[in-house]
Image 1 (tube, rainbow, N blue to C red):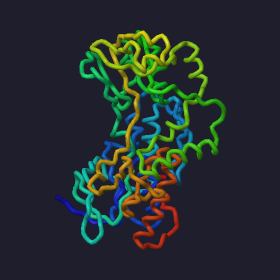
Image 2: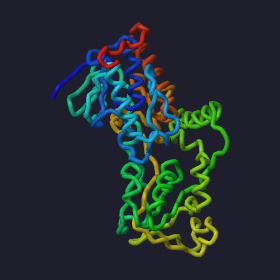
Image 3: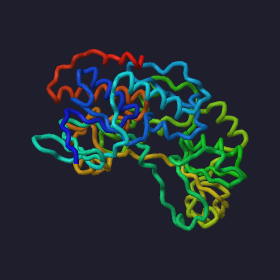
Image 4: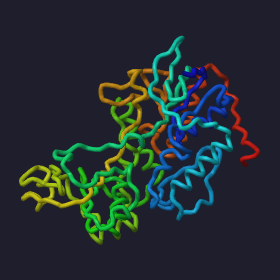
Length: 379
């Protein structure tokens, strides 16, 4: 097994990881000499490369450019996976970030002389500092309900969503009250034999502008949970669903008529039991109801992908990793970016910069303070 020694290892090459890599170069560190970026995905684009083809770039909300290079002139009709994947590839090449992929990271452990050992599919890295930018896409959350294993149809998750054509002529139950759930539902309703929308909580609709003050308030809610060592909620999850023209039209057509969570799953659908607390919230559901289905689509979100950090014992009793800024409170060598309050494109950019500032201090380096020079061949 190969063994490498570096100052910094960055795990993940999504928005947060590439931002961190850019700022490491800005601080005077060189890729493959002082730091390395490891990514388990097959190509550039972070989680964006796995998005369904009908999520075009024009439907993406709040995509902020990576530091040092704007994303301009993108075709809003092209799939976001293509647009952002190509942009990330161009960014990696322009700033010579030399991302290693596909590389799987299995564990981060204590090393010798105060360092860390990062165990990967291409060898073990000894490092003085770690920036974990692994996001959430690898950990889709699939709730468990009684009878789930008896269902005869399909049970895909947003992570597996191929686009609406795969649901043509079928009876589909979409579970989840977030942006992905509503997007899936509106698309599928155009081709399905029937759709049913089920959420655990009443959806929160957001009217009016969502400006900087509202954004800061949403981030503060997530940040407070992280400071307390609780599992973070997503920034999107605390902002509510925007009442766009498409949403308003779908509500008028009845596509977004929501039912509360069912009590159990049966081989050919789902059931609300008579008189159960869940059924009672639905008014006429108090007498019970069964909805037949061919597909249950779980648009139930994701959880942070931090299993590789388990050997370091960073979790608090509340189940989350407590952070001070981006730094893990239990280990100053470890920074998490794209986690909790920085799990948005603009938040990831800021977190990458903040993490590098602290890492440079830990390493005892004096920042050079200049932007990395683009490769002439890539400009």
